[in-house]
Image 1 (cartoon, rainbow, N blue to C red):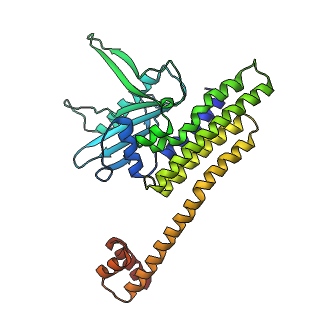
Image 2: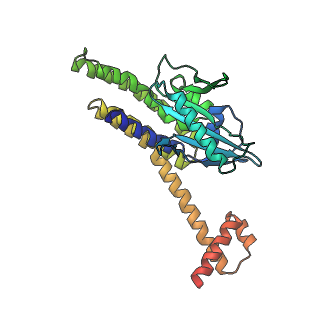
Image 3: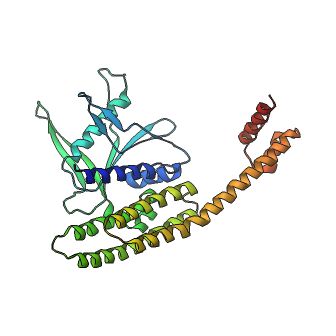
Length: 328
């Protein structure tokens, strides 16, 4: 892997880490959409688990995302990998990731009845490629002639528009819509048979199309925030990734500062009012806490404080402890 490809992978990996640390509601809805599940985010807990494994030769295996969903009496493990390019070794790598996770979850409790539980797995391919099938697989033939077909389903991201992602509640994947333009822009940029002037014209046309995609995506993200489908911190992270991918494209493939300015203006137009609104909410919350503190100092009944301020009983008790701590 050359330095440029490695650098791009690191950047994409970092973006995935941001997008897969959104609020619990958004993440549970995403898993529902990706794996055709039906979890109620109010009734489950969600945990991010280890994605780095050490093999027998002390080499390191790095997976992208491992998530565990816990219900009242069961737990379910999920593993998601992102790919930009087709990779013939991906099925084998998924087998290794899944096996290491199954062994890790088993812990030291190994006996003759041990059962290894594989996580549900999915590979998301971002860039269109006709050679990518609906599933990845390989066949494992054991010494006793038993043959096992190991397969992993694939999501062809390029087949999903922003409306599709919205309808399936896969909001975390919205900013990656911008990434779908990279292949066409790169193919123009790398073509040795096109003059510099013609490249500039063609790439500018691609960026005009990209602006339309970005505007549509930002409009949908705004709708989701206004309808309380995502919260302020989700919005900030989603817009940050969208901006970073856009920035990467127009900085890498020429001097298109006007395009960058358009994206910046669209993001700012959506996000600045949100910052103000979130700030007002935070201000109201802080003001309410001050009122509760004054009530506590007057030795008012805690249940009455909860009723008058709208704070939870737990919040009021924490404030009371803080007052007692200051007194000591």
